[in-house]
Amino acid sequence: MDTPTARWRPPLIWRGAQLLARAVVGALARLEVTGDVPDGRRRGPLILAANHLSPFDPLVLAAACRARGVSPRFMATGGLFRAPLLGAAMRRAGHLRVDRGTAAVHRALDDAACAVAAGSVILVYPEGRIGLDPGLWPERGKTGTARLALASGATVVPVAQWGSHEVLPYRAPKGMLRAVARAVWRRPVVRVHFGDPVALGDVAADAPGAARRVTDRIIDAITDALVPLRPDEPDVPRHVDPGRPVDTSRAHRRRLP
Image (cartoon, rainbow, N blue to C red; front, top):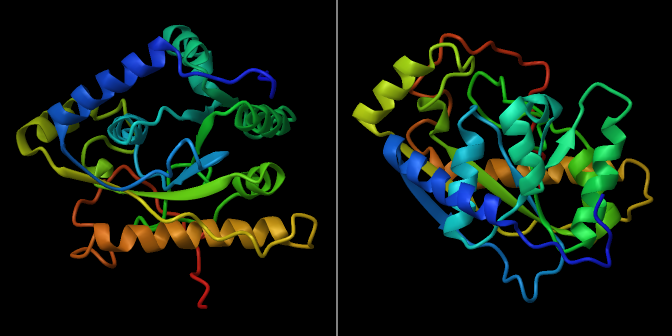
């Protein structure tokens, strides 16, 4: 676990992996990155909160973050850390393990809080899974990101992405070879936008329901940032993955001002 006394620096393996991610994404898609990340000398603790569309997302976000000069530590599912080679690489790169559905899941928030205190930028998927909304709009989020933000005082920047679902299918590695060949031929546009920080200063951390209110604000901000990335696909995506299940039980309803 990190300690607040030791400032974390991105290890060489992670910075090299980001360069590799840019090359891979560039071979399969046309990456467009807009918006900015707050200046590291003035921003203080920082959490990047992104929507989750596809197994291709981590590569896209690694490449996009590289384009903005930041090397975030991903909060990723424990299954990735159990893979023999990938797991070892992720541990060495400093990413944070989340064992969802187990008693150890709470340890992930403690690890993330220590990482933020040590100067790390943390990247999270507030939805907690690849979204199954039929329109691929952000789902109702889990409260872990909000609790981390409230406990650490970190700035939360919404990160919206669109197009990664056209590169890799939901059930990858099943169908991956065909999808990759199609992407190399078509090179779909993948867009990433870093939005304005989410306003959280009016929410008291100990107020009843604070975590849920902050979670909804974060998902609202991601949704707002996503709208201009898909102007011609306001309801459903043009590209439909037949292997992606649909689940409307976690549909997020945008709160009006």
